[in-house]
Structure formats: structure tokens, C-alpha cells
Length: 181
Ligand code: 5GP
Image (cartoon, rainbow, N blue to C red; front, top):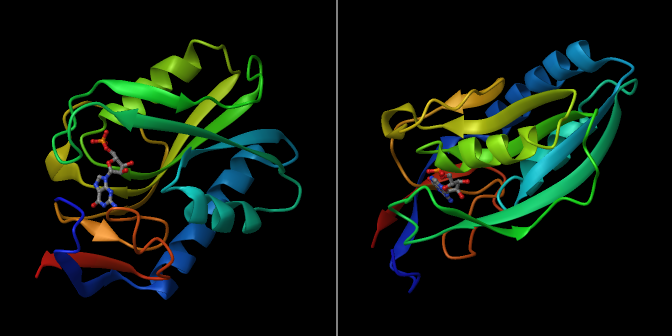
């Protein structure tokens, strides 16, 4: 994909209603596990921003939710993830002895998630969970433990609800498949 506008929206794969319902269910499970406790939601920029914003607002109010962000980029081109991940922005919170939940938009090969997991686990959180909106099981290369999952989906490129193609379409409330013009 070259980002020259050669892709267009094809069809909706997940509606806003289906997403909202699933986000509420995940929030209920997290609330049950962390009722009355502090939990540091760490979103992977930029794709997880909208998912995480909805997720934290659906939590039980007894959860002491904090928000932080991390940004990474993978070396090589976007469609063939090499596994080498470069840190662009670290989180600000000191997480030793704290409960952390890493919030990611998509698990494709799983390489990003396993890199971040290893890096954050080395900081000694008392609990570490991962929460991913979409999983593409067909593309999976590494066994990356996922504690909370929104949906599994086929190996298609999707945009909307925070996900972009060349910076575009993050604002769409539904999740769409794109197609070549
Ligand atoms: P992984 O390291 O699991 O292979 O890559 C995960 C990252 O690739 C996601 O966080 C996301 O940025 C990107 N990605 C993978 N599949 C898609 C997709 O269908 N749409 C978009 N917009 N990004 C994707």
C-alpha cells in the first residue's frame, strides 16, 4: 500500500452497535477482576485511542482507572512486520508493583504485542494484562498471551474506529474493509 489514495472503503465488517456491545462486555469483565483497584490502561498510539476511550468510560466506577500511552513503530514496511519494534514514545507512569493493562487495536502477527509485553513485564508490574480489539488468527506468528479480546476476524485490511490507512479513516464509527480502486 503506498498511501496515494488507491484504496477505498468497501463494506462494514463490524458495526458501531456490535462494537459498543462488545466493548461493554469487556469492560464488565475487567471491572469484575479489578473492582476497587487501581489499573493503568496503557494504549498503543494511535490506533487504540478510540477503543480505549470507550473502554474506560464503560468501566464500573469503583475501578481506579489511570490512562497512559505508548508509541512504537515496526521496522521495515507496514505489510510485512519484521518483528523489530522501535520505541517512539514510552509511557510516563512508573509501573513497578502496579496493575497494568495494555490496550492494542489489532493483533496481526502478534510481534508488536509480544515485544511490548516483554518490555513492560521487565519493569515488574504486580499484574499485567493485554486487551486487544481485533485478532487475525490466520496471521499469527508468535504465541502472544491475550487476556481480553474483542473479535477475531479474517485476514483483511480494516479501517475505522481508530484504525487508519495512511492516516485516514480513524474517525469512522464502524469498522470497514478497504479494497483496491
Ligand atoms: P503485529 O505486530 O501484530 O503484526 O501488528 C499489529 C499492528 O499492525 C497493529 O497495531 C496495526 O497498527 C497494524 N495492523 C495490522 N492489521 C491491520 C489492519 O487490518 N488495519 C490497520 N489499520 N492496521 C493494521
